[in-house]
View 1 (cartoon, rainbow, N blue to C red):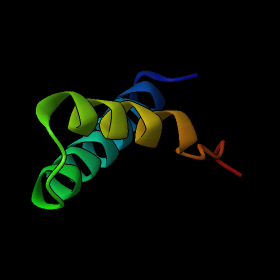
View 2: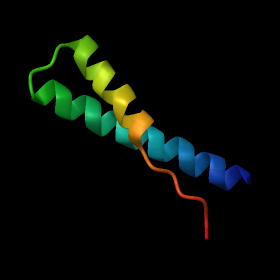
View 3: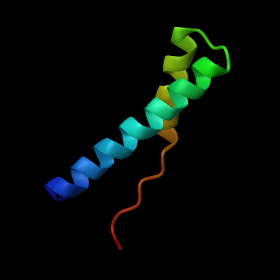
View 4: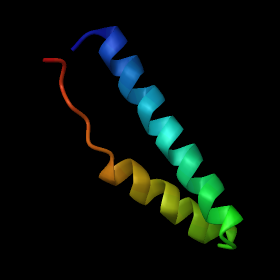
Length: 51
């Protein structure tokens, strides 16, 4: 795995977590619930190796 691959994975995880957290807060979840939503989003993100 190259450094670019690792950085791409890091960016994807951060992006999906930020979106999930923001969506959860806008939906009225408390801070803890929004954090849980962000973690769940990172866990469910499907990562595909370069073809």
